[in-house]
Length: 543
Image (cartoon, rainbow, N blue to C red; front, side, top):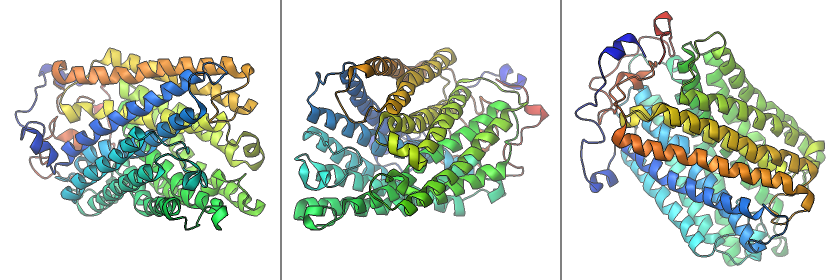
């Protein structure tokens, strides 16, 4: 921290968005984007730990080769509800609805999002959708897998598929409203001087993800409606017994669900861009390339869906085209990784907790991306399709990438959100434990998949037990790494030191207002006069 910052002890501002109006009613009817972000934070944290509980039960079952803890039907419900909770009720809304909601308007110099009432409505819609998800869980759980593959989901199971499908359908509208708000706010509410070439990379990333939300989410909505109609009225869209085509469902599902990966990962990439440049004390390398790579990922994401279907009966020529496109989508992701690395090169790197999570993201996401190329190659995909190799790849991208970026962003902007600093030593320890636990959990699964262990099986040959025990042990370590931040964040709310306006000596409009910010973000309209991430020699003194 700079010398000037050490001479005056930071104090909390007398009035800010957290104490501007007390009472539960003021929170439940708020139109303040910051409070709505906090509501989302509390909600998705619940679903994160609920999904984690299902994951713990899965790993307990897989400690032994025999399926001796749960019946096969119960095990099917466990991995289905784990996937549904984590993907639809945590990963998709995590960075956009929490960090994006809180920080994007402040980054733009706006007093709020363009449509505050729609923003609040999006949270209520999400709550209703999540409520249907909980109702499906209470009603016995669903056992189709989170992908709802037909004809399983349309008539061969007796679980509340329609209830869960309706919940996901409703929650999808929350994504659409959030994406709409982000796009309009970015176009219409930028501060004077905030040109497109001066937008923070966090804004570019959320803008690109918002395009996917707007264009892709209606497709999964239509798909789930058709599943519900076929299940309820036997209209014969997907069920071959009724003249339907189950492969059509896969096309429709993955047309949304692969771009949905980038709804999850693109905002996380924006978080990493902000953290890396801040703690390298150096202007981000290749700003324009990183910004437009976000748009490129959003565009390419819509043309690679069929790489999930190489063994589903599509033509060889179609598979060849989708294989080439799947390799191409790796290029803009690689651009970001190389540019983050170049930003750190010869920078004054400070290993604060957010930077530890950013470094973990870069390493784990790179492994996840590179292993995705094996799945994009037709020959190797035939061997490892629907094995634990796919499980490991997906989790290296989604947990090693997305969750790590989310935790890094929470640590980075926690002082701005709450005005309080968390204890640095346990935070660094939690980051290290998370990194070790994650690799111990999921790296053995690459080997399991290569050796041929299928996913979704609750019993397996005894020769796979050692690797499964390692994976289950790693899950226990990973759980500790996830629980620790919850504990010290809550502790910091009461006992943490005041953070000050800019505890990281960072650039950007969000660091030019108070911590926590006032209700309308700024006491006067900010004017942008310099390019983003303009770290000069004067900024080389780090915290």
